[in-house]
Amino acid sequence: MDTKEYISSGIIEAYVMGLASEEEVSILMCIRQHNTEVEQAILEAEMTLEDLATRQAMSPPPELKAAIWNTLSQQETTSSSPLEPQQQDLASIKPMASPSSAAERPLRTLAARNWAIAASILLVASIGANIFYHNQSVNDQDMLVQALVENQSTEQKLQHIQEKWKLLQDPVIKTVTLAGVEQHPQLKAHVFWNTKTTDVYLSLENLPAAPKGKQYQLWAIVDGKPVDAGVLPLDKTDQVTIMHQIPAAQAFAITLETIGGNPTPDLTQLYVMGNT
Image 1 (cartoon, rainbow, N blue to C red):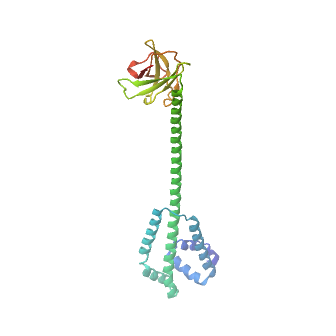
Image 2: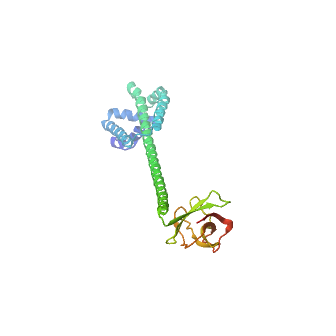
Image 3: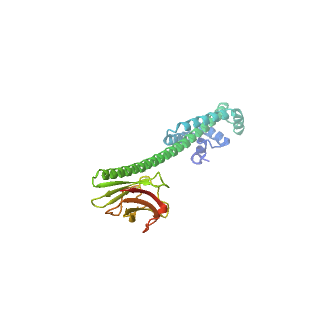
């Protein structure tokens, strides 16, 4: 094998990455001492690997740094003992090498392997750090979306309060508080009744969400009889909602009816009621 074929055979790359066999390392060390092209190819391969590690490197989180140095310390401890057997094996494979070069071979091999291991660990750490920061970025985006949703919810609540406050300040608006009946004493709702235009606005306050298949219906009690004042839209239970116009009424009440409402109230499902 001539010099160019040897350089392109992949042995140099395997040596730099610490993947070459002991026999290949022994032969390569012998050749590089007498061949400047091989020596230059080895140096270039080492520089290429170093540049790759440098470009890929980034500051990992503290826990990754600790793991890297612990791994390197263990590797150096476990790799320092078999130097003498390696010297004997290499000397037996290539007896023409000088004593000084035979002593240098295992040291260079060990250094190259440790360097390759360090570069590999740094590369893995860099990938791990990229994943870590990517996940952190995703978490930050999720938190931002959550904050936007909460902010939107807060704005809707504020708008709801402002609407009620505007109705309360209007002198033609009569506010009727609907208190919970005996079965639901903790519940409350408000009817805002415009005695001039006969418009009626309803705010459920703390009434629970209507069960599936059900809908709240407002009734005006006129001369002792219930008059349909409209059903509350399912998607507006947390808002001030305009209902049917009521010219006159002695009281208002809310029942839970089937979706779409009923012509007469189900008094077993009476939730709140209040006199005008």
